Image 1 (cartoon, rainbow, N blue to C red):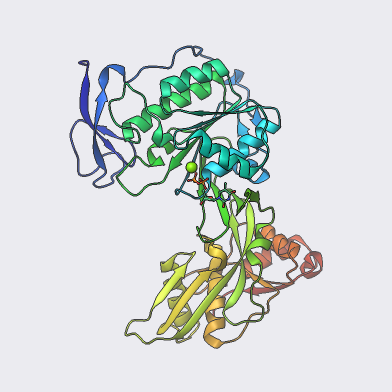
Image 2: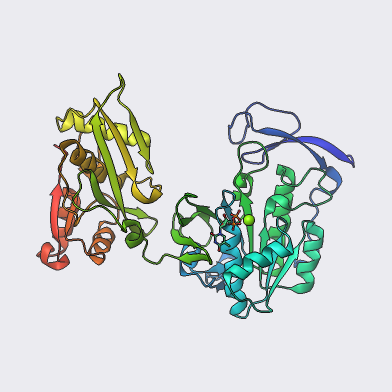
Length: 453
Ligand code: TYD
Ligand code: MG
């Protein structure tokens, strides 16, 4: 290939590379995602030097021992990572600007530095003074925590080799650049190349590296989409800016389960773990009001109690109005149709608003029964006893189907002092097979339901 710079096109979604512009990406089938970039072909596949060579081994010889893990000082974060951060791994933390990524990672740095690890926080976004101001809000730090403001990856590479830190943060990947790649920082080519270099550094020097990635509006700069394929672990930090709590979610994890969540609360002095999110979510809920019921949803391996609220009223429009906050809009429509047809309620002509209180976003079929009950409760203006929790999926025939991990859900309800459980009949029967007197065993009253009618 000829030396010098060349124009290539990258897919913003998956990083697919093409010589010419394409309307649809042949790899991920997304439309209108190609962006033009100048790349320097002579330097493209340059490998980070000073890293040990690979050898061939038989699979039998390979031990399946878990890699060495470091505890981050946050139990919530450790659980999301699958029991701490793996040494030599590359982790991506994505999220909207201002959600608290830098705050979280600076706190992790602080925890690790206080535990005696040599930590390096590299920022390409903020000045040393800005980092200092933030760190002062978070509390004391010791000499183990070092900071560097740089965006040139060649510099960073040599710093890492000299300093040999035990934990590194790169904030953010969109500000990093490698001079040999012709394009601007934040472009797909740069992001891809920078991540590649960091991956090799993490593996070669055996340092856990965490990179921050901004989620941006389509097409402007390379979103973490491209990165997700390359890194070991992808965490998303989400939340409503008007609410104080934040949810950390793992969407990819080479060293643990995905879909695990950790809950944090943003305070004046940084993020605080919420060790009992169910209690936190249910705080201040209205008691004995029509249209509200507590549901038990699963997030990964963790049961989470949330309040489902519904408001059903006569419509003033030719087409009834519906909204769903925190859950799938189409699911609400479907449940209304099922209630109308199978339970014989003339609810379809009403306006219906459903809300998961607290701004939590859930996408779980186990929520169906709770949503249906809250809708009916509001429609009939009859409250559901406030010591009741509900879980179960609803099918199109109106049948209530079993959901995963019913025991975990029931135990969570018991832990938080609930007395009554409305659950699918099938789950109830399975539970009954396992023990003689189910009500006595759990100390709860069970209300099994087979069909919405
Ligand atoms: P930040 O970590 O800068 O977000 P990101 O790196 O994801 O862009 O978080 C910024 C927000 O967090 C900002 O609006 C102020 C708020 N914040 C607090 O409420 N308490 C604190 O102790 C800190 C450090 C920030
Ligand atoms: Mg930041």
